[in-house]
Length: 263
Image (cartoon, rainbow, N blue to C red):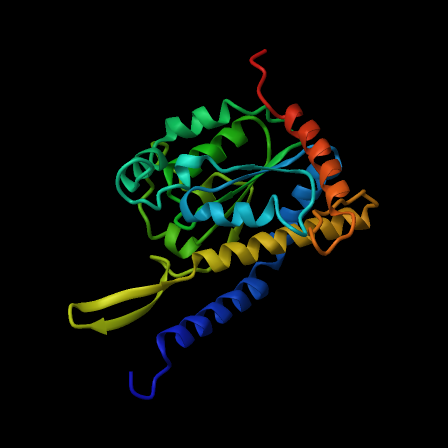
């Protein structure tokens, strides 16, 4: 590459610029979204979290996680995240089929009891993934406010794939724009076979937004005098086992109140 930056240094420069854009342009959306999340958790309800494929990574980053708190219910369906074999059982073809199936999203939602005091946070880089749009619609239909994290430049240039003709940002109440380039990747390089597009940014953007939302929500809960309980670190916190047992007990109670009972 001569005097130009190496690929990895160029990617880090792009990632740093992206994080700065999120911080400088999305503060209002993060504030609105964390208000909704704090209202839900502070009233004894929950914030549901959803993502499929790599968009499940920010869900796992938020809960359960060291430094996180009670009040979240992650919806990470195994077939929607386990496609690493590519072929065979739990391979990409099966994943691709269900990720593009709104009906699968409706079936997932049948497992949960959603209250108007709850909220949902849905991650989708493209904003056009049918199952993510469907899950957002299902939460809206149940009266819960929905927050979407997506790349608007990608979504607005992409054709809707949900039968409704809607994209995620057209469904949700609050949109947080990751500013990730259309197509996700951030570098175009030349090779013997032609141009290659490499260096995805959606995951680092998602994780940054996820932590911003989590920290802003915790801050607001503390300011409201809410009893914030964070996950302990085994080997670092001396009372980790005791605290974890209490967290599990309380989470079971929260989870039970949000499971569909068929009544």
